[in-house]
Structure formats: C-alpha cells, structure tokens
Image (cartoon, rainbow, N blue to C red; front, side, top):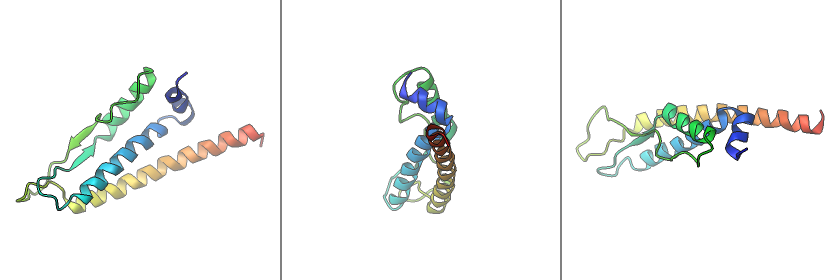
Length: 123
C-alpha cells in the first residue's frame, strides 16, 4: 500500500486538501508580492480540479499529482495600464478565505491524529 493510499484512508480528502490549499496560499502570496510588477499575471488554483487530480493520482498508485493541475490565470475586473492583473483587495480576500479553509482542514487532521494516538495508547 502506498503512502498516499494510507494517508487517504487515515485522513480522507483532508490530507490532499491541505496540500492543495498550501499550494494556493503560495500562489496568492506571490500575486500579492507582485502587485506592482508590470506585466505580472495573477494565478490561482481551481481547488476542485486540483483536489480531484491529487486524489486520482493517489488512488491509481501514480506518482504525485502534477503541480500544474488546476492552475489558472485570474481575469481582472479592471484592466491596468501596465498589464498587471493583480487586484490587491481580491487577493487579500482570497488569501483570508483560503487560510480559513486550511485551518479547518488542519483542525480535522489534528483531531484524527489525536484519536489514533489515544487508540494506540489504549485510552
């Protein structure tokens, strides 16, 4: 049984969700950092597509899912003159929402680990 299959059995989709949310957090942080970079194109992760790709690759016993799965470019509401597509307020909201979802998945995983630890100790 592969490590990915064991993780899926123990944590359900939450382990894969943490990986995808972490990847998304990095992209959003990159977008915010490049808000003033001329020509920078804001990127995001289609969470459903990326999660599905991670789960499918783990179930098939294939190597880790392609990091590019679910990557998209953001379409700006207002075009900037320098070609930058980062909208700072939108990125900040996306970052906060993603951080909240990451925290919820992490809380579930921690609870599952605590349950397994108590079972091993016989409590």
